[in-house]
Image (cartoon, rainbow over all chains, first blue to last red; front, top):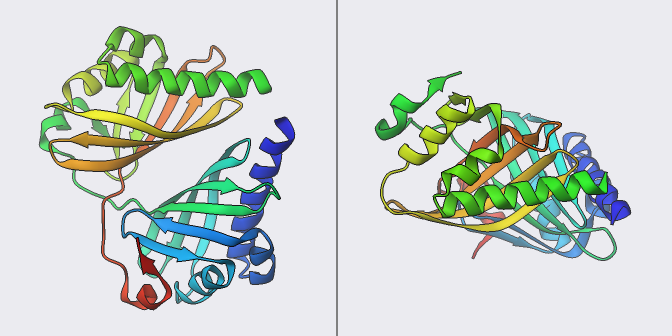
Length: 129
Length: 129
C-alpha cells in the first residue's frame, strides 16, 4: 500500500514535468493505451493514448508553463493542483487520476476553476486575501 | 506514515459527513482553532474555527446536499471531490486540506469549477460525453 502510494505520486510528478518539458515521448509512456480523459466542466472526453497525446501537443497553442502546487496520492489514485500560465493569464488547474495495475495513468479528470464574484449572501462572513 | 494517511482520509470523510448532516459540533471538532479557509476563485478567506463555522452554517442558505465522489489522502494532506446539489443546480466541489499535528484541519483550499464552452482551438481534438 505504501509502495503504490509512492508510485502514484511519482507518476503524476513525472506527468507534469513531461508536459512542462513538451517531452511527449515520456508523457506517452506514463499513459495507459486506453487512457480516458474527461473535463467535467465542458464535458470533453478524449480516449486513447494517441488521441490524448494529440490533444496535449496541439490543443494548447502558444507559450505556456505550469508549476505544481501540490500532489496528493493514495494507492492508485492521485490529485494534483497546478498553476498554469499562458496567453490568457494565470489559472489553477486541478486533476484527479486513476492508475491501472501497471502504474500507468488510466483515468484523468481535469478541472479549470475560473474566478467569480462572491455571492452577496455570504460576503459579510468572509474577508478578501 | 501509513497511519497518518489513513487519519487524513478519515478526517476529511468525517468533515463532509458532518456538513451533510449539519452537525456543526462534530464539524467544529475536526477543525484547528486557527483554521484558515481560502477560495482562490473569489479570494475569499475565513480565519478561525468560530468564523468558519458561521460561514458554513449561515453562508449557504436553502436546502442543499453533498455526496463525496472521492477522497485522496497522503500523510497530513488530502484532496476531495464532492458533488454539491443546491438551489442553483448540481456542481462539483474540489478541496485540498492540510492537517496539523493533532490531526485537525488547519488549511482548506476550496474550488467550485463552473461549466464553460470548449475553446474552438481544441474542439476538433475531443468528443463530448
